[in-house]
Image (cartoon, helix red, strand yellow):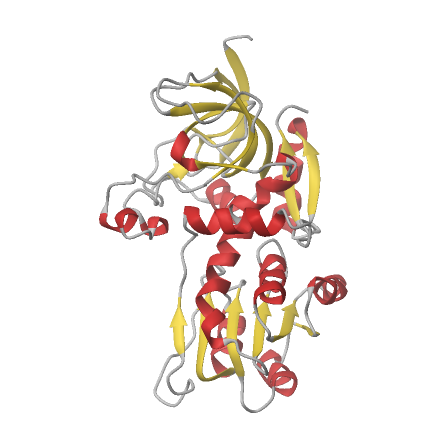
Length: 344
């Protein structure tokens, strides 16, 4: 093995590109992986576009936080994992010591504002070093296909898990935005709840996909969304609404169509706003903004994926095609998740 590798990095603010960097060595309690696949996320696009001074990160760093691969080398103190084992990487770089980690809510760890692919070196390179506690074996799952589960799959699962107590026989759940995260949310709802699922999507070609994933109804976003959604959901409203878009329009539609004692999850970082006032939302309706997922929830997602009942939509890109993959993500023309293959 040579001493250096190519990595796709944010070299400076608004200046992404390939660099040659040192191959990292695992320290105590760490594992080095050969990266098999890296899913690209809309938060990456935010990093690519923002000017200096907005985020509290120092450039440069290697992008990519949805990572899966195979064990390449283990550091001292690691004795329960073997070279070539297939593993998924939790995208949260948790400390394991703060009060949130001690409560099992490691998605709110004091360190989660900075992690692999956002402030620290991520997976868009041939190798990455990760703390053993952040790795989960994936068995016979293909690590290329498993990569999107480490954010899109698990983040959507965390939101769905929050609303499951509201979903009883005869209930209705709405998923707004059936892209990289929302497509998984439809599937988790299908697999884990008795709810009738209604999908909302801005791309007409995704409507039949939403139905194939488990939605009973799928409607096109756009003008009059709140009114048209009510016609499908009914006057009683939806027991759970998960908004994976987060614009003014989708947030208003979510709040207006939530049922009494229902839940609204605002997941998408669309930076929209919605008025919240007395009489403007159903009584005893919860509105929450979830963050990421716990490592235990990622383990649940991987178990569900191993049943073979989960559709993992991906478009694969060779490493040299990373800029084109980000461009497709920005344009919104992907069918599922873009996955870059650093060894291709």
